[in-house]
Image (cartoon, rainbow, N blue to C red; front, side, top):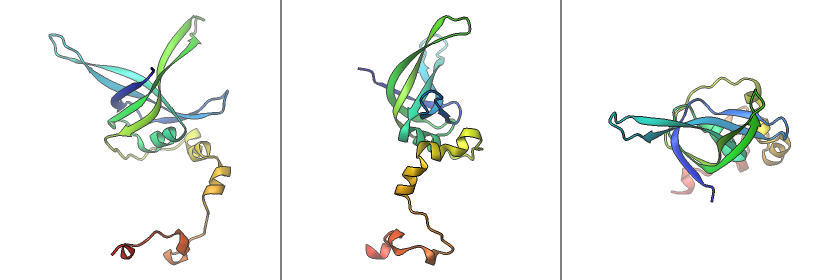
Length: 157
């Protein structure tokens, strides 16, 4: 069984990337995980894991996870073999996340550039958005159609 659960903190904000071969969009970040070291110095060590996520998990990570926020990543280990600059084959092991739970919410304004500006269109194509969401022009609160409004507290009192 291939299951991994890690708790740690991202070393930087998650990034959205696109696979050039398949066109799949994914989110990637590096997770720092502390491990106890039992030596005479009583120092803790740190392991770093590359974490990849796809689909809704990728969208959740990109929109909500920030550098330094304590989180739990559940997923599986995946191995990839690629040649290095000398032509020798090297193995790289990374975590493919199926679930990410955030325990500390850190809100920061992140500048959007390049691929990240189109993140919504990459994760949810426009054709699907058009079927799910109805666009309306709203000037004031009175312009919002009644069926789009939620129930008020008066309905429950």
